[in-house]
Image 1 (tube, rainbow, N blue to C red):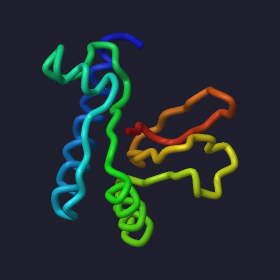
Image 2 (image 1 turned 90 degrees about the vertical axis):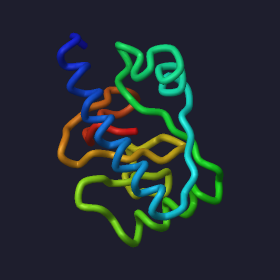
Image 3 (image 1 turned 60 degrees about the vertical axis):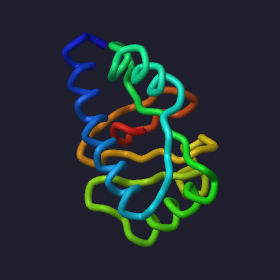
Image 4 (image 1 turned 180 degrees about the vertical axis):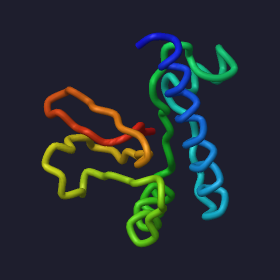
Length: 118
């Protein structure tokens, strides 16, 4: 990915993170940075220059509450997909929060067309 497209993607991810942060604060949910997101924050004071996603974790109780909140009160822009989804091509053991106003295609075991995610 070239630097310009990576920067645009990171700006989209940062907007998503701001939304997620506000959502978590308003619902008293705890979360924390993981992996490259944590490393980027500590080492680069932001993103690792070539990073293309956000990695966050949550205590299990908060994770389950997020699932319930998003299931019964979906937002206009962001969609939560889970291992419990009906999509046969979704083969992750964790949740992904997608930006429905974007398009991103993953070519792993299955070709998955969704949006930019965290």
